[in-house]
Amino acid sequence: MLEVRDLCAGYDTVDVLHNVNITAEAGRLTLVLGANGSGKSTLFRTISGLVRGRSGSITFEDKSISKLSSNRIVRAGIAHAPEGRHLFPQLSVEKNLTLGNYARRSSKSELKELLTRVFDLFPILQEKRSQAAGSLSGGQQQMVAIGRALMSDPKLLILDEPSMGLAPMVTEQVLQAVAEVNSEGTGVLLAEQNAQAALGFAHYGYVLAEGRVVLSGAASDLQNDPEVQKAYLGV
Amino acid sequence: MTLFIQQFFNGLSLGGVYCLAAIGLTLVFGVLRIPNLAHGALYMVGAYLTYFFLTSAGVPYILAIALAALVLAGIGIGMERVVFHPLRNAPHTHHMIAAAGAMFFLHSLVQAIWGADFRRMESPITGRVEILGTQVSWQRVTIVITAVVVLIALTWFIKKTVHGQSIEAVEQDRVGASLVGINPNRVSMLTFGLAAALVAVAAGLVAPINLIYPTMGDVIMVKVFAIIILGGLGSIPGAIVGGFTLGLAEAMATTYVSAVAGEVIAFVVLILVLAIRPTGLLTKAVQR
Ligand SMILES: Nc1ncnc2c1ncn2[C@@H]1O[C@H](COP(=O)(O)OP(=O)(O)OP(=O)(O)O)[C@@H](O)[C@H]1O
Ligand SMILES: [Mg+2]
Image 1 (cartoon, rainbow over the protein chains, first blue to last red):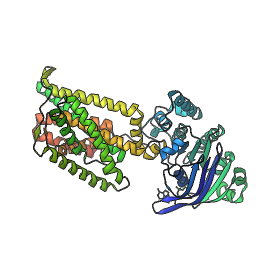
Image 2 (image 1 turned 90 degrees about the horizontal axis):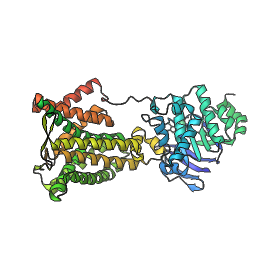
Image 3 (image 1 turned 90 degrees about the vertical axis):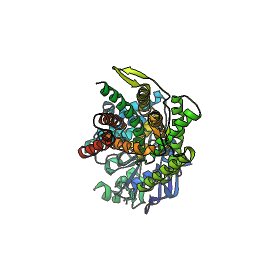
Image 4 (image 1 turned 30 degrees about the vertical axis):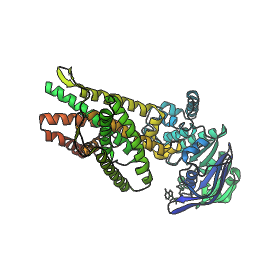
């Protein structure tokens, strides 16, 4: 579904990604592991059009998306819940969610259906629907971020460290929701520090180091890989 | 007491004009994070265009204002495209210089077309109405009513329509807005168009009361800056409260102290607010 080929990307004067190759299959959960600064967020930002790639190609459902702007990429079916969440802090939870549907412009009934799906996934958001998103706890804000991305009814959901800064209990809840979304058929591309938990429900994984893919394989293989165990699983 | 009521209406009408002028500036600041120094020049062009449509083209007053607002919306969008869009990644000082350039350009353009003389636009709305035992001119009543109607329409547009929401979204988080599919370029153009249309309405409303001349935008510009700092940069409710506060304060100070006091009151209030609450009166506390 998503094919990243020989991608090089970076910021003004820094090169971050070097010939990165990654595939995310439809309906699968693809995990990206990597130390701080290895380029996970840069990879995701390049896919969703926030950062321009320097060379290489990104195709989604056999169409090139590497020249498209972010708003076109959402329309194509990729939703990105970014690092740092980037919510609309003074708008209500519900408005944040409905804005998540901006690209789709769904009918009233479809919109309601999508909202119900998000509220089923995160019941607390229904309770807090009229509160300003910025007044919520970190975990709840992360739920809004994931919910907002889901409101565009994406084929591929990109999640950048959704558990960052969350308490263990909340982390578990958020990751469970991610697994649930995936099990219902939405493809997920996930960066996550909790490698142990994430490898448990991922299908395939990549390990990034200094902007290069250094290891890839089925999640179960990565789980048993001594390198991965040493670096990410604390074994 | 009659004097007080009269001045109260004067203050309200002045406040309505300040609101309409200030909201545009605060909207542009919210979306682009730049103070548009050419905002006062847009106000001035709005006054001249209303004057043109009313006297040279002979259309009715309210329609003349609407036409001026429409043309100004076009000029605002053009200004965003030609002056600010090319600078979107440049440091903020570049925007200031470019905006000052746009201001001088509009001054000269208007001078070339209409000359530098002061012009008077005869009030097309004549007569007075008795309110609470006081005679208030229909022109002032028209200003207050129009300002309130426009403010209500604007609030509805921003809170209830998809395009209005896209403005709020870009103001609050540009990256988040892009990721939900909003095109920040289109929002910038929309905001500039809206700001210019609003300031044109302000100018058209006040034109029959004041004189029209090429630098007429400069004085109001400074006051409008004071208003949006007072209300909190980027805050629409702040601009409304600030606009009416200043309008009333100015009218009262002029009457009960002196004309000079009326002119400086904006800055006295501004200095007080900055000393007591530097972020402005209505800035919402944002928790991140
Ligand atoms: N806006 C930016 N401008 C310049 N350099 C940046 C920018 N953002 C990230 N970098 C640099 O790019 C490199 C990769 O950063 P990136 O955020 O992609 O890593 P990451 O794998 O997501 O790390 P983390 O686990 O901390 O989120 C780092 O060296 C970082 O300093
Ligand atoms: Mg990151």
